[in-house]
Image 1: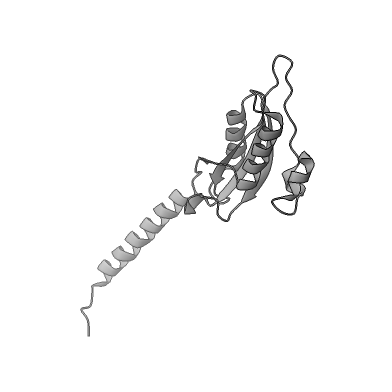
Image 2 (image 1 turned 60 degrees about the vertical axis):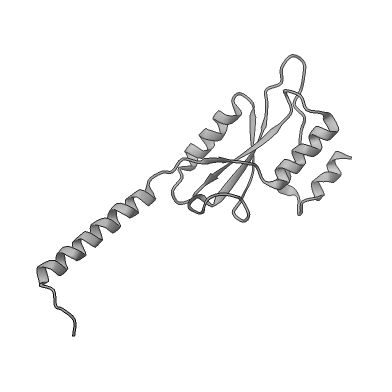
Length: 145
């Protein structure tokens, strides 16, 4: 049979383990900043098609994304970060993907956005189709014909 530890040593081990678990769970629950990421392939392909058709100007829309964790990222902070990235332009949320998103495991979700810069000196921002209403990758291409 193994060596028996005095009760005081066993209690100290349990308290130490509990304290370490409490500290680690507190770190995991704290708010984590969103991580900048490339937009999803669908968003980027729609933007590329728009650039091919209309050309790329300072008022052309552009896409970006942020990785976040639904459990540890403050969603208000995510939206505020996206608004700051877009500046004075019009911001559109284009969905979240959790699979094949190139995001780290602790922030697995990717929120995709498109920014339509504020039009300047007579130029107008080009409209893109609403990507959320399409069933697959190529349905949106019909709107460009």
